[in-house]
Length: 70
Image (cartoon, rainbow, N blue to C red; front, side, top):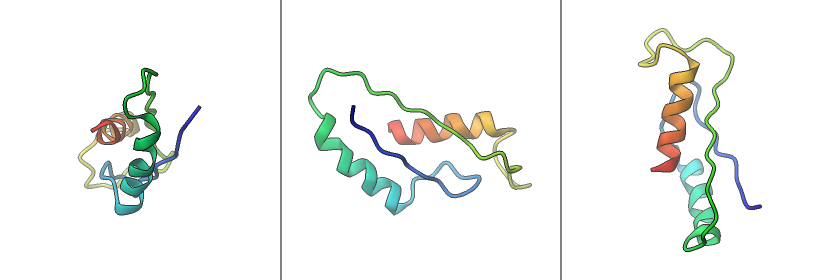
């Protein structure tokens, strides 16, 4: 298998420059190949920031997975 880990800033779903670069390095290995791609979103057990746009870690995890997919 081929893969990489992408890390996010605590409480954020936005890809930073390092995360984007990791995904860019992965692309040539998967473009045009018929395999399935699996993206998993995780969040820390730490409480979300008080001003978070997410109600819980599940929502944040999903937003992270979507950001990575896009």
